[in-house]
Length: 151
Length: 151
DNA sequence: GATTATACATAGCCAAGCTATATAAGCTGC
DNA sequence: GCAGCTTATATAGCTTGGCTATGTATAATC
Image (tube, rainbow over all chains, first blue to last red; front, side, top):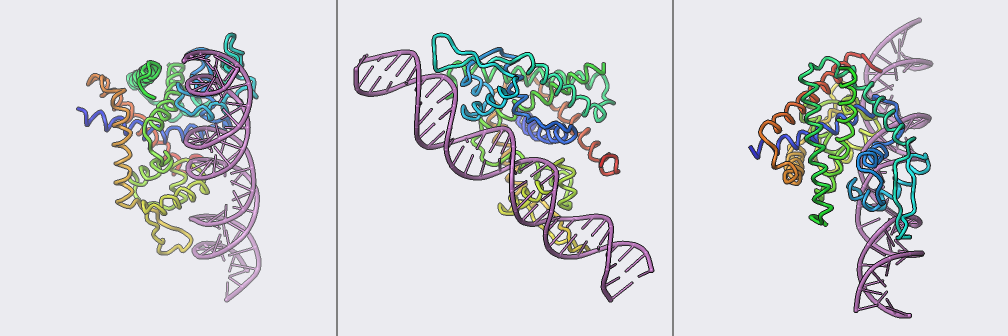
């Protein structure tokens, strides 16, 4: 059972990488996955400080500084001064960023759809259930991290 | 239904990106996903020419040239001269490359396991089924491509 | 109020991705 | 049998995403 879980986790990450390449190459999209991932996190979890955003996204703080700058240049996030701590900013997804994210999702979905359009209802439900499983575990990993579980 | 499929595909790619970051940051692994993806393709589909490997992996030919060089330097692939066409090479996964891939999979599985260790048998089965669904579609996309479906 | 800790920015590196182009080998037509 | 097109891989040069190390400014503490 444990072995089966391990195999599945390895397969999951492995097959993910190929799916990502398919999505990226099939769409002519020029923006990077990191940009979309960052907006998605902000949309799902709400405004937060840059450092917290980095931890949640599992990238280093300097990497997030770069990403936020790129997002800011496109007008897709807003930097709000944190009243009470002049060092910090609250990063918030701008409506235009959410709209761009939605457009990107539409685009990759449209591109992938032909490859997946013969899925049965059950198979679609299986994919949806898996997405929820992974999402819930990501959320748990985040919560554990916030609780100071891991450095 | 179509809308549901589209939403699921968008979610799938989106959540993948976060899972990839979790796997990368939780493991101290220094090798890149592209390296592992390439060996996995070679292992699953057998030896092939560099150009075909690039098409199957959905990267450009120069990108694959770089990856194959990196793999060759580590001794993880072999370049076999193609008898009958002096321009081409057959790229083959070396046993040491397969072993390294297996070790990497073990490592990320071990790192992710604590986050996923309370999954029920049903949930594990759901993830496994999803992996198979995606894998089968990737294979189909590859076959369609080989048939000259897309440039 | 000097020291230490924290939040973010900067510098500088490497890898992965791309397009454009070069090189070398095969293929075709005459 | 070689001129010229096509094909297979390599090289050049760029951008972005990732990292560590370090700088700078503000809080927090003693």
